[in-house]
Length: 385
Image (cartoon, rainbow, N blue to C red; front, top):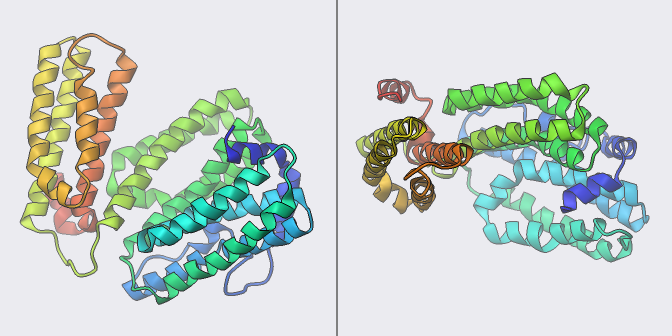
């Protein structure tokens, strides 16, 4: 059982609601009264405004960390579990800023401190006193996180888009954990929050990959049809599929942000040719899957070879950004399955993984400019599968 599942099992929905309500207060600079979704509602503007938004968002987990310390000192297990859950959800939404700015600080906060607190809270009979020094250390370390965002150079505004889609996802993560713990009532409440928040993520997903956004919306419709009456076992695969589709959308936005530059004002001709090459690989991968499905295994291998050749045109640019290995691995994994008859579901999943790896690679190359009018026209003119 994971730490999160154990925590959700221990903590009832009523206790959680009460604890989270207790975390709400007046509108201070750290915004304890705001939920993660409410906190990130402003649109992206200039890099300066983006950094202001970063500082605003990065402060949102701190009140929950403070609440955790208070609950632990009072030996209040329900309160501690609620505060930990709220902190974890808020932090998961905004951690991208810290992860990008300082991996060492990120690791110290999440791996060295937070995870150890979670391990203590997940014990059958947790010793809350033993977690107090760790929680104190976490609040102090979090002050360093805030200072890093306040004093650090502005990041590209796309990082705010990453935070948006991750913050919206926080409620979906709670849905999954609640279902694993068999708490369908809690899953329904969190799903309702996720569904409301998705309005903020939808246009960001559509801009990167409209087909995947359609998949997310279709997966949500499947959950909608079952969420009111379905059992945990009925809902788990539906939510798993929704999470998978949503995570791909996050990966696309994340790849664009992490490879963006405030100094770069337009894509180069090489950027566009690399995007076209990766599109060529995608077209070939679709052809390979059609051939394999028709039991034309030689045709599938020939189409896969074309995908590999096309990828090779963009590989040097991706390698320069340490982003070629995932595509190569996905292509190799698919090749290992299409030489003959096999498990259709596994082959289809490997094909999708290869297609999505090339999609992420396109965002690495030119995601920063994906919504520019000229780039959109260029993309629209590329061959379709």
